[in-house]
Length: 345
Image (cartoon, rainbow, N blue to C red; front, top):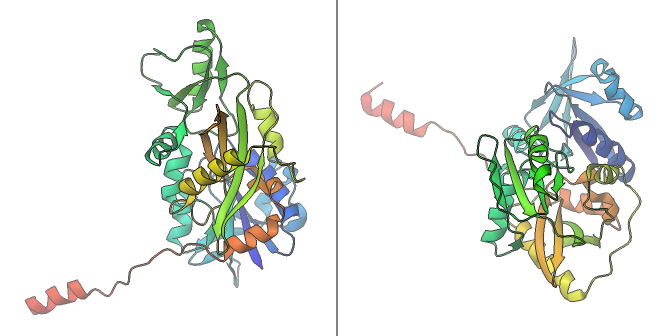
């Protein structure tokens, strides 16, 4: 089965996407894989299998490889006297901006390229943490209380200390801080505003139980991964999350009450169905007083959360069978022809 891994992109998570692609490469056995790198200038390159190493990109060696152009159904490489065309399915593994904000989803839809990944409307609800909360609230899924601060607004925070400061549209814990007292607030906000114009503030709950669950919908119904309880210090910071992007060994399932498992599965399906179809996503939940709260939706999780699945390749194969197709209208110019006929032109 032929599949292209699309990675890179112009975002703060560009390098993490490279790490994810290298990791997923080793987990997709039985696939005829191609590797398409999107650089920060939005140029696409076909990367040799043997060159799928971090230094290929840090040294700029990818620029010597075939440059691709998106066309209907795939990509093409124009050579001097011929053209190589690649009509294939794509796995969108671009983290952060471009990959998760809807940019690449729109481009792939525009060129009618089949792909695993969130569609543009799904990106709207998962890329910005504010909209994720609106979305969860509409589905009657609990979220922590929060407030929003804008870069040009008064820094008047009403959430009691301690609280956590997050850029609204960043992942991988980039720009995130815990604020324990007023003297730390301005610095934390300055850091967050380096990455975003909008900041979300939530109460920080010491020792809160956090769990990760990934899954997708296939012909077999909802397919769930195991549920993981990530190991963390105060919170799951960038260094800890960065390691997730290179993880390939399956982790152990968390020991959780079956009632809580069912609540997580129910919340996950509500969030996923009819919005994230065609994507493999990971939801991060808190459990507080036996109630499940959504923390975040990861529409393109680190290394596609391969380490949470018993058979990652089988899950990807099953998902490829049910990718949504863009409904393209038929244009026949009937309206213009009728007007022209009426005018005798």
